[in-house]
Figure 1 (cartoon, rainbow, N blue to C red):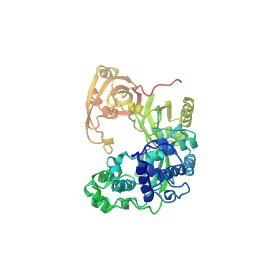
Figure 2: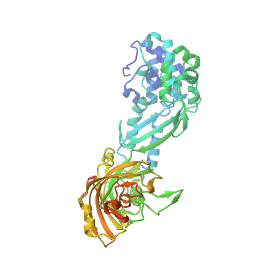
Figure 3: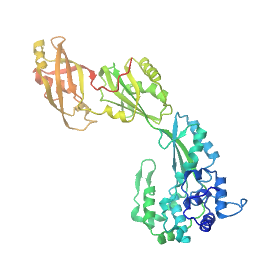
Length: 495
């Protein structure tokens, strides 16, 4: 037998501790971990091999029945015995195969019932009571955790079955959640023993939960041993049943960036739904995302862009930068050529929107979309009309105005969705082109966030100064186009 690294070098003491843990009902792996063995390769043995090691520690015959193999372990609830075998790993692989994810390596996470914390504490106190000299200098947090031991054994086995490497960090995660129905009941004594530790906290998915790993760990650290023994069996009782389990898979989000042009004056950027009813048949988001979602197969997605244009405003020039966050995508491996094919499919599916520079970016790069949101400039072309006839000479007065500062109250038309505030914005420069006596084109370069329509007609005096005051006649806007969003991102791709 390989030499073990235990908390005692005395064979007699090791035999006594091992027999005590076996009598308590601990499984072979829990016997070894409570005896201080911390080396991962020791736990890569099968449960039968681990049983042989414990038998040799106890100096019993090899044909002696080992109770920890047949009954749920009171320390790990059977997780390190019934769920650390090849048969269980095959079930994990089958679940992964069924969900159809694409991945190159994997991370495995484990959620164990919270009641394993007081159960482990009870075993440790029992050992300290029975073997005070051996355990007097041993700290409970030096005992290898159930999670670590399970991963030491399961990692290589799962990697072999899946045909990929197990990593400590990966975009693809296999999560095994073990559920023990009596977990909260077994932790219930802590509410009376340490009431000051527990506060009900809101949990998004399950309403309210009382026991968290942190709160239970804090309560166990603060409660004295005699008080703990009055509330909890030391050693803990054999479980009535083994754990149930759930296997779920998830992939880190993938981010798609690009730029879009919009040629329609009846198309919103995102789905326009009021009181449960659609106000437009489609949206920029839907026209772009349909082909992307079809290929990446995420469970959800989020669309964001560098600002937005109104429904009746076109987005021209090189387009507006956007990002699609694909939540939990099942397919993630795409070459630049395949992304170009997706882009072409989007562009062929509609005449209202065109996409360019479609590419996969990192999570870190997504911050580029919002950085400089206020500092960037935008260029517009507005078709305007005036109450009085205007000559080109009248219009030329605007050409000399540079860096005009506006005070803009939140426009009436967006007050239902934006807070009332006064925003300071800058018109950097303007030029004009006369169409006829009452109509002219106004070209503007402005600070991002400037309300162009309100600058033209004044919004009942809520924007000052405005075009009507500058030209000395009431003006209104007929049509508006965004000609450029001056953000050099995402990187331009070869055509």
